[in-house]
Length: 172
Image (cartoon, rainbow, N blue to C red; front, side, top):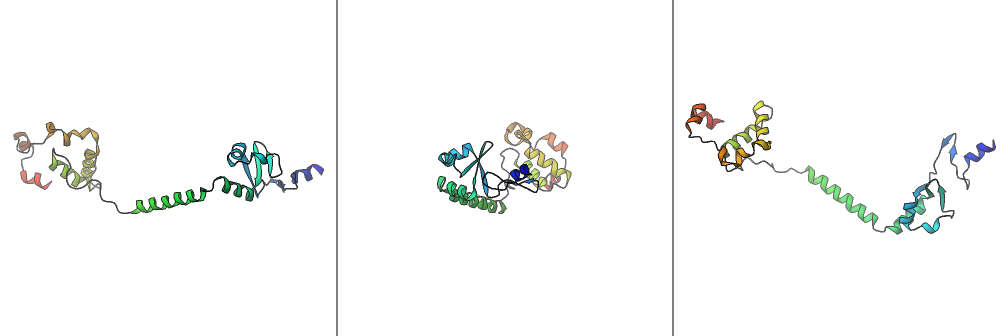
């Protein structure tokens, strides 16, 4: 009986265990030794204001809040600025942004091919749209739009043999 009574009462009569369940000081805050040093309250070690427990201390939550406010007086302003920035960023993300890939071809080599591929890539529901998007974004095809050696010559005999209808080419 004595042991059970001792378990239910802490040093100063604070209830630590109730009904067999551990109740860790509801109105107390656990602070480590490092936090005690940061807050500048190392002179309170050994007083009833800091109750030693394992590798740190328990202190009254109201005292902790007052000490923290004194130790870092601009904490609330920093918190407000952070929350305001997050709110602005979330609003900025919900805005309508212009398309990054404009419809005007940006390449100097094969601009008509790039324009056709961009037009096809807008419709990703079709197989051709998926392939066109891959060709435009894949780095392996980068030289197709930058290197003059890969320029498509529409007037070339080989091109005309592969694409006999010039009207079909303009449709694409």
